[in-house]
Image (cartoon, rainbow over all chains, first blue to last red):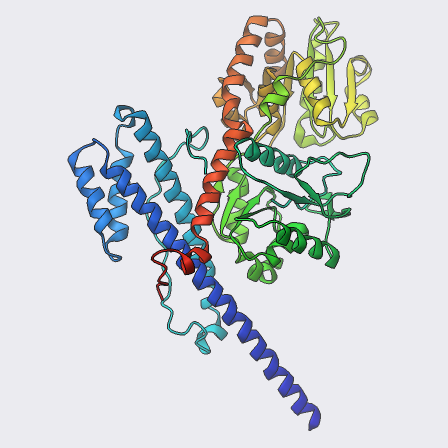
Length: 166
Length: 381
């Protein structure tokens, strides 16, 4: 009888420790996702600012302005449209300094999106665990969602990155 | 920056860590490296920016024997190193290897960039360890893969995406190397660099090509650099060819650079399983024309044959024709050397380091500590 109680207590204690560890992991992941979103947001914003300052077609400038103002719901669509317009833009006609700034801003978007989606992936993996769902360890934090945009075609090698130093 | 493998043993990851650290320092950044190495080893002079974390233990891992380090002593050293330096960012190499990088990651409280080097697809152990490692791996902010293959393995086995940034090469060191005494010589010298007993590296194809070529070239010579069983190689070459093969064994970076400067052509006849081909970039940096098999990775590096000669993988006849053609044509050799030098500029460490810096900036931008203290720091909860 005594042995059973000891076993049950040990089991409960183990479960409690596990739940606490999962909760702290989850908290760290939520913070990481929020921070990665802030970085991606800033990267997208910078790309839109650079694009809106280009002397390209007026539709491009309009889309860039729309991207700067877009709310969270419309963000993916507008950024996608901006990305599509930038992909057909003739870079040779731009000033070299501006073209460089644009390439750099686009590259930063690519990296920031991977960083953010990685954070989302890790968070979703943990939140899908049964213990996390049953004990509602995530509290009221909303479920993060991937940011899906088409990645611009960047040259894999030999990207001109002058002036990219910190 | 943390290197998991001991600096006492030459290796791709170790060379990558030291090259990248030097490249970043040449751009004016402050970089410190923590790596397994003996503290006061007279046989090995460490660069001033390296902090030794103790001697490595040789452990079979991932198909080869690698020097790893673990245990409380290593953890203590890693912890002290992080506290002695107030880092903005931690860059770990090969964090899945059970070594210093993993220990440091477990202790880290700052943005972490991780570079994945390996491109092996038989990673059942890795898949099994994934559940245990996951809580630690969650601390990585941004990931880098050194090749498309490494990135794919990473995506399939570990989950998560990575930014692809290739290996760098030390162009200034290689282009300034002096040839060995007595070289370059007349009669034609072909070079081979790599583990020559591994069939995958294509040595049998090269031997078959040379066997044909020695009929018309009595003074042809093959210089071989790398690990392997010399006797087995000479037996495989046969009596007619064996006397023309000089096996120099595994050499230091300086020795390898000298060999590249000495040969007329470097031959890379690998049959497959190559993810990048660092030796191609080294040869291009040294100004040595390259004849390589037409693997995807190689044709990418050689710009589809514009910066070197590509031959069908496994074809001894095609290899013999390409090598013979180049040995007979000094003008073409110098044209290829010039094209190679132009091509290799994009893998020079300072250039590659700039791309790594962009990932660093993104990782620092995604640092949670900025959220709490920075302007507009309202956490979107």
